[in-house]
Length: 172
Image (cartoon, rainbow, N blue to C red; front, side, top):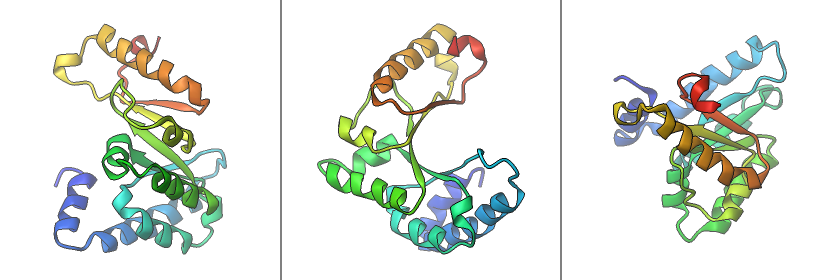
């Protein structure tokens, strides 16, 4: 297996997804807490909405979790497919994490927003993911996508983090 995502898919097929999630969280989060000297550094953990109940239960039982500064990331398309017509439920999920002292983030990979504005408002961070494919390696194309998305996100007044951007030319 080449990635954690593939491992998660396999664990889901074999119905061992909760065990995998628990093992990963029990190993990564305490190590981060013990080794992190800079209390402004945050640990970003990608999750699916399907994992939300298990994840919340697991991380709230970890020692010193309040010092971890966790940001739970959800993918925009996962939220869209799960939450089609369930805006209140999506907001409640995010508020449940936040009520336990965790922040939430939304991973966006397209220039178009697909959720209702009230859903975007319940996240603490936006992580703009620009995986560069050979077809879109043109700086101007990626820059246009980035600018278009950032302009749409600015109205929510939340931190925007660029991810997978090759060089400053695209950001400038």
